[in-house]
Length: 298
Image (cartoon, rainbow, N blue to C red):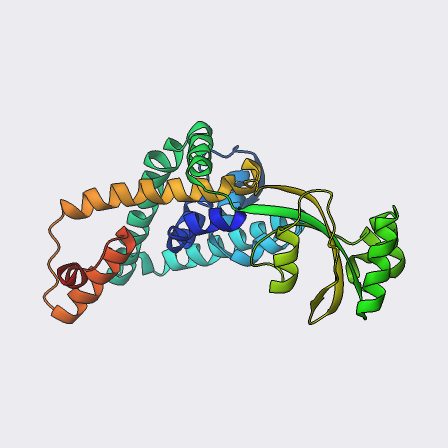
């Protein structure tokens, strides 16, 4: 069932970097605790939090106290160099002004996404989408089985005789099976078709709960005696296991909805035909649509 969820979610995987950026966007409403001063100017907890988010991804790999110290040190370094740059008038250059304009636009982009995309996805919406995805699924049947693996057909037949005389399958598996599952009484857990070698799978799915094979089942690994403990429809993954994936799906859909509307209403002129074709192809891919040429061939 997890695989079915993954298949449903895979169409949204291209937004992984986008969603990660959205969810990791720095919060601006941090507490204004002053943790240090530099030449009389305060450095607050909010400044440190922003530095952790913006300056170096490697901060996230450090223990909390080291991360806090590294971020504070980085803020001090940045401010010292920034002050010197101010003294030299570097902020007045055309290149700097262009960079500042781009950084402002990027920050506004993040603020818009947080306000109009991220905050619009409620916990209730995520749960509702989970229920919707579960309802659409046609889960395959799975069985829970045990087995005893031995080297020869004679050994397997002797074990079947023991079972027919009332022997306990799990105990016999612990004693005689050469498989790694022997310590668990031969328990292989639940599995669907396609997970085991064909001979084993065919025999296992032919049994009802409580039944064991009356003849040894030969495979490339040796001779098996198989017992099925349970049959059921494969269970969906718990909501807690996939809620982050579903939230990412909803975030991407909301983002693409907003982006599509804005792009449709925008006048974009790219004189270079080759560059325009590449940009258009990227946009179509981002919006999850076929490129115009591909649409015309259908």
